[in-house]
Image 1 (cartoon, rainbow, N blue to C red):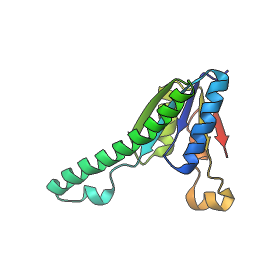
Image 2 (cartoon, one colour):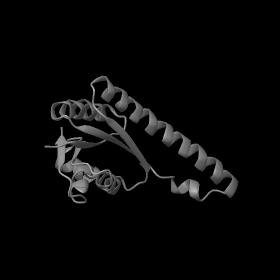
Image 3 (tube, one colour):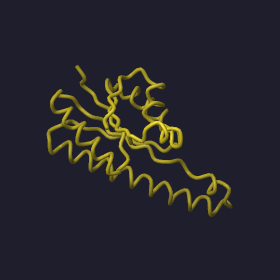
Image 4 (cartoon, one colour):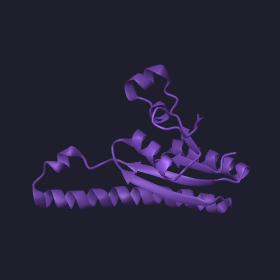
Length: 147
């Protein structure tokens, strides 16, 4: 059925649930996983800095976001190895998280996106939006929503 799961994570406690459940699903299906971390882009306030400050702040910001992505993906990879699931990791820096999830899932030819929802309800979605709904509108890849 599904042989390649695409699992966006961010290192939060909630994303740990996505890791656990996607690994169990991958084991039962004999599937592989591509873990994905989307880090924020460089803040606009830094872009307006003087050139010397901008370069230093840009390098520091990129180092921090790459270190965070690597930490999250390394944890996911270690968990996958422990249960015998093949794993690859991807990360990008952008503020267009929903589009990035859809684009990278398509690029790596995933056949199922596994996402976890915050379960904020209708009012919470009005305030914070819904990555899950936005991803669904941007891809043809089936989406499994965990709660």
